[in-house]
Length: 157
Image (cartoon, rainbow, N blue to C red; front, side, top):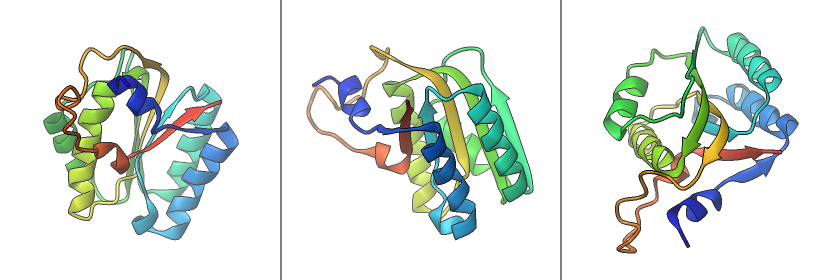
């Protein structure tokens, strides 16, 4: 099994309605229930609806659009997300994401989760690119760590 196949195995297939319902429920339940979400294949309409929902649930919502694939190192993602003010939702819309980018992001999100940060962070990517230019550094040695548990991954049908 390749690392890309492993990452794909962590995706949950959902309709846009199911994804929207999952995002809508979390602010109602409170910060302990908020989990970062990555969705591949969402429509522009869903992203607009989610942004409108987040506007009503949080004091601040920032939407960043990237014309290319999403990629931040663990340190970059950690620095960016740690600096977000309380009661702010952060949304990134990108063309694509790869397993390597998800790994880097997952490590940063897991570190923030471990210190009690509830992160209303949402990344919408048009596609999951394969093969990834970067894979998990320990995949070939079969000595895995698993940061993907820090993210809810959705493939939108």
